[in-house]
Length: 556
Ligand SMILES: *Cc1c(COP(=O)(O)O)cnc(C)c1O
Image (cartoon, rainbow, N blue to C red; front, side):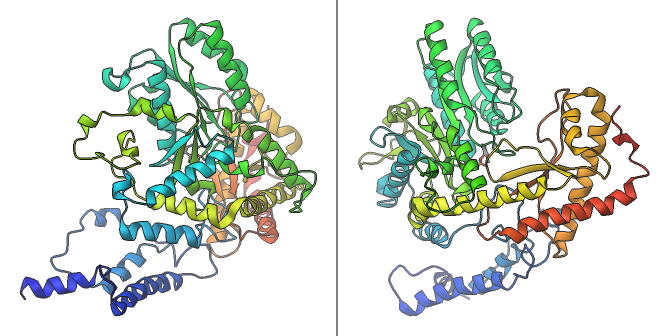
């Protein structure tokens, strides 16, 4: 076969550059076939097809095929990779902070992928670059930044948003690090329930994880302000430079919210007292919590959307912290966490756009780009190529939901979470651990029959005499988890997850917890009740087999 024959076939595998209605419908049809095949994997269970464990050794031996394949053949193969995937929108999925994605956000991703804009520069992305600016404006306003002064860029994940915050702060505290490298005296503060990305970032930036100071948290999973102040004073007294204070606004495991207002006030005090010639940068890691800002001006008393009293209380409890997001110098937002957009859709906002100038390269460093055009974020972004998929997906959802829609979808999952907690608290064998956190994640523990759950929680958390009991109950909760999830696998019940360390006891032992993360708008009251019923059933089932060998459960 001459290359021309093969080329003809290859051309058919591309969307046509000039409209060709027959081929256009072939393209649409190819998509539909793929979606049909995925749909065929759906059952009543909360995952596609059946769960197959991948053969990673075999995968390492994969070789590049010698000849071309058809669109149909490739599609069929691609679909097979979705086998076993969790359906995150399924009412029986309450596993983690992974959201189901909306149709408009999927179309946003498709459109951006189809015409491949590169938003490093408007010259390469035309109006798609506008989407980034519009989303920045909308979310700035939402969290209380002045959109005329603020700016923002999409980046490679929530991790990337915090990276921007820390890098900007580093440059403020130690000017010239872009050229001279990172000095040894830079330190970064976070709470000990913050996301581990802070360790990545200090590691990769050359600040060093030894200079990442993790401050203990209160039982509400909020940074302990007294200890933060002490540590900041100590650092400044020892001649350290504070590159950044990362306030976590919605911790991953428990939805703890740091007290941003007090952190900002503390910064002001210390700047005066130590006569600092820079302002230590405050970055709010709000990748999860940002969405709660839609309730900042919801009239709680009037409650026009008719949420239950417990829901209203949870909203008010979160907003008392989220309301102050505008005090942070920069904020990280993940539309792929609580914005119902596909990965990756992460936006870092800076309150003052001149902060981004600190990251700018000189035009001489980039001779082939940015000679003209109005929008050139590529002059300071870490990435060179940046996809239009994130901004278009985010824009799609902001336009789809509007403030009211976001209030409804968030309000509903908050309502379901509160209902779950109500039911969990209605039984003597179960206890909610993060009662003071108002997100849609619930951490709870189950105790065997005969254990006084009113006493045990504080005893195990505070009294080292209960170490053995805590460890035994850690194992017990892992067993409960195994039981509940193997039932869910058979179509009986709900998938939940577990965490190996919800937090540490006062004597340093990790506390294992069961975890329900509610993010699907399809979850309803019965699904929540099922979680509780299944957990209690597991307690019965395990209790009988355990009574003889769990003497470790005794406290003293
Ligand atoms: C998920 C998460 C991150 C990391 O975000 P990615 O988008 O996964 O990179 C950072 N901080 C918090 C609080 C998170 O929950």
